[in-house]
Length: 453
Image (tube, rainbow, N blue to C red; front, top):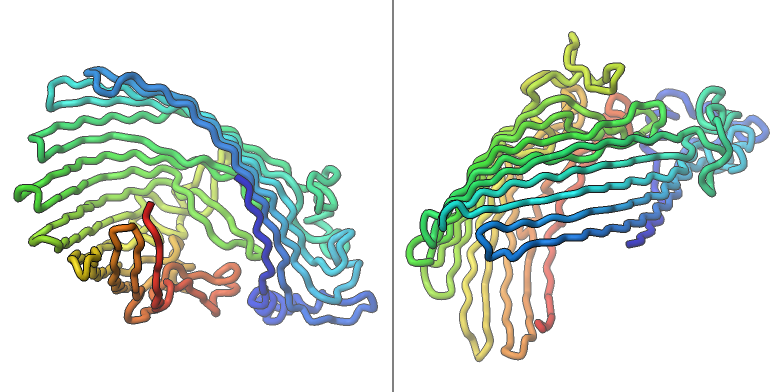
């Protein structure tokens, strides 16, 4: 897979807070030493490539003892180019060889993942099955290139910190070349019991991971892999002669070194590890067909997620997050960000015949409670919680016997400004006076026309 994204972004908030309020704009002058308009903008280009392969072998799946195993390889590369421009600045304070560029990011991130996996299942009885599996993995993550100012503007960072010639096409030199390698084994154990042809329950213990990596600001330490231990009990049932289907699960998850991102110095994203957290939850969905053509569906999830150790905001000499500090940025018991305590939805759909067409009318409702926007207490106090919201969608449509379909729909019927995230353009202590939010799609009325094949 190959993808390229080109962008032109306004950076006036950053310029206002740093350059106007704090007076940094006085440093932005032309070749004659005269101050210029300090407004910044970004010209960017991101090139993504992804190469993924998997070999999977399995024994006959109708046998009492059966196995699945395989190999996995994936290589991802991200070429990052961000040119921070201030029109009219002099060549002496520009990034070397790039007049008008006050800051340049030109880097290549490469992520390689290797894995060997296997799973075996055994039917102890016709009703009881035990499954066990292992996944051995290795990840190699690297980041090299350049970030920062020219040596005429900064005597300690950017070009002044370079130790080698350019490693990317756009960079004047190289001041970042780091790599992280990790390997481990994660297990899975599952027991299922078929109570009847219409009901089963299961117990699962599983572990998962997410690879670590290198922060784009080279002076920061790498972030480590985070690991999740999942203890889960669940069920799947069909009731009332097939008119009701009920599924659900309850779980406890232990999350170690969980990763989250913040906006740090100079507005650059920093990925950090935050020690231990715990997630307790229950989720369920039920579908009921009370009459011919009418289907009612309800689903919901309750999640209690919180830190079980302090987040101090810094790491020890081995790169592990410190948890013992007098004034943690997020103390033990702090809720995890972006996660509502409850989220649920309701759907009602009625299907019927009209003039030889298969017709339907459908309405849906989704509700979500409020959630913190940031793990750190001081930052969340600035950006604020994500408010609770309720959205309603409607649709009506027909389908011909030949496969042609026509549907009219309204999404977000009441045009609510539901918020998906809240943020500032740079570090909250600097830019937090102007907080932004990403809304859901506004009320949209549309018509879909298609053909099923």
